[in-house]
Amino acid sequence: LAGEKSLVGLGILFNDHGGILFHQAVQAGEDLVLLALLGGIDLTGRLYWLTWQTETDTENDAGAKVEHDEDYWTLGADIALSNGPSAKNLAWSAGVNFYRHTDWEKDSQGNESRETTGEDAYIHIQPFFNLGTPVFQTENANVFVGLNTYLPIRIYDEIENGTGEATQTNNRNSFGLYTSPNILGEMAINENWIVFAGATYLWNVFSRSATSIEQGKDTNDTSIITMRTNATQANAGLRFQYNSLIVEASVADNLDSQAWSGLVGNLGVFFTF
Image (cartoon, rainbow, N blue to C red; front, top):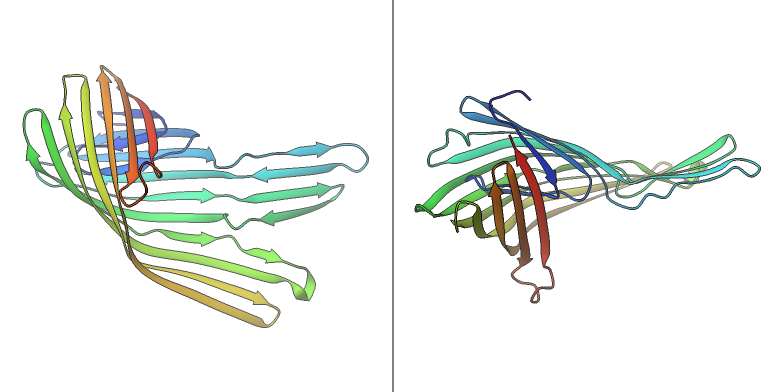
């Protein structure tokens, strides 16, 4: 992406505290973030790949060749627009996340092979819209409130069990609407260090999951509709910036869990140019 400003992020965490309050964590893998400034609008793209479970491939050449291959990876892309460069009191961002999540195994012997699809193989598409605005500002401190809304859509791979007339086919899909009000405060200690803390509350406004099981002429359809609230998650961290280098560390925990039982740590390293 060409533009007047670019950002490449390498690490396990990518955060934007510019009023949008959109938080995103990435597991170990390859992660590339590109940002272009188009007038008063930011266009951000992210490509990533990660292996979410240990893959073990084996091969035995004694006699008939026997192979076992495993695929447990995720390949995804995000794209978003935001008014960050021109925002004064109200900032927004909108975009879509897309990724392919695999859960496949393949066994081969001689000229015969059999592929197995696991329950965690699916395509995920998620449009999102975020709002943020400052409610308190001084020379060294800021407090923001925000609202993140997203619509996840998940289509699972078809799973077949059995053979012949006894073959059972399983198809699943799900979608939902979630919204998450949040608050973030940050304070500059000096020109290089910033400390921040915040809280987020997740509300499942509406979600539906559906399963269709077919066996011969018989079909069994099941759907579940859910509306629920979840726990508040608090987070706190420290950010260091020197020239083009940015290092950020943070911890997060659910407020309704036992003390420190759900504690999660994040560390990110970024370079701007």
